Amino acid sequence: MHILKATIVKDLKILRRDRVGLTMMFFMPILLVMVITSVQNSTFELVNNNKISLVISNRDRGPLGKTLTAGIGKIGMFNIQEADSIQTEDNISTEMHNRNALVVLLIPSGFSSYIQHKADDIATRALSDPDSIQPAQVTPAPLPDSLKMYYHPVMQPAFRQSIQGALESAVQVIQGETIVKKLYQTVNQREVPADLEKQILLSRQPISEIPVSRSGTRFVPNASQHNVPAWTIFAMFFIVTSLGGSIVREKNSGSFIRLKTLPASYLYALFSKQIVYLMVTMSQAIVIFAIGNKIFPFLGLPALNIPEEWIGLFCVTFACGYCAVSYAIAVGVFAKTGEQSNGFGVISILIMAALGGLLVPSFAMPAHLQNIIQISPLHWALEAYYSLFLEGGKLRDIWMNILSLVGIAVLFQLITLYQLKKKNLI
Image 1: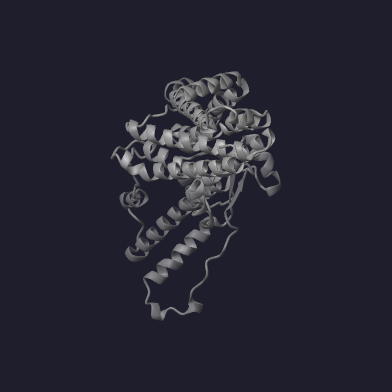
Image 2: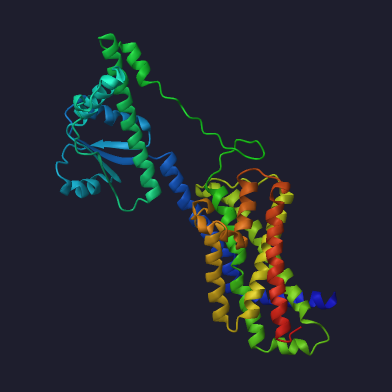
């Protein structure tokens, strides 16, 4: 125990002198968490609270062009500006820039006549004997120019598709209402009464959004719940820049050879580094979680809600930290220079982060990557944290993730011992 205690004190002193490494392990992850959370929180607010600037140029002279504009306004996600000045597609870019708009919608001339003609056609088919209708008797609806949506190139495909879906739903509502009114007029030979028309227009089925969690709570996750745990994992594994580099320096400076002359195994030094840097990873998690819970509200960000399952949170953090330390030691043992250790370590962590779901959600990955992501320890850590922070899970819900992290860490340890044995260092 005395040898292990002495090596721990030695490693703590070395770590205290490594100011660049401490900065990389604490300050940079904290800054990264703040920036990423701020960016994603602003995106959430754009989608949920703010309205997208939409310019509508209505070239239709019928009633349904104005009805479509009103229907889009009722969706609630657009800040509508009408611009009759857009007569050609050449000045669309100028109008978007002048009005600071992300989307421009052109309603073509003949839009109302097309919808009404289509409603007449469907009503005729619905109220007639199907066997008596000949194809030549059905007059096809005149096709106007299609609705055109111009968008700013900065918009990502998923965001653009959600806007397009909202606009398409508004068009479909108008088509459905027009068809129902036409059927009523055909059957009853009179206009739709005002009260019935109002019921038709307001007969949309509302959809309630209810989050589901293992704990049974209806807590709605925020940007902090998504980002803080994810980038805490990234910070833990980023200790490879300090721990891996420390091992490489010891090898190149001849410390390994001098340690072999001592009446103690190098495993003591290895255990010492594991204990010291495991404390570092646990400290990283405590500091980042505390900042997310206490400091974020003062920065205008949603507070991080700490899970009630303290035992599960500790076990996941400990397993993730142990896996990160094991990986950093393995990289340091195999690397021959500090450049190799830092370069390979950082790039490999970025790859594991991408596979683990930190950069892109795992459910959005292609099918051929769904099985590969399981080799990334960051995937198991992230799934465990999400189960605790987002779903209110318990320790029994994440034990498989913890065992997977420990198993991967043991694999890294065995690889390290094999390399040390191969070099006659143990």
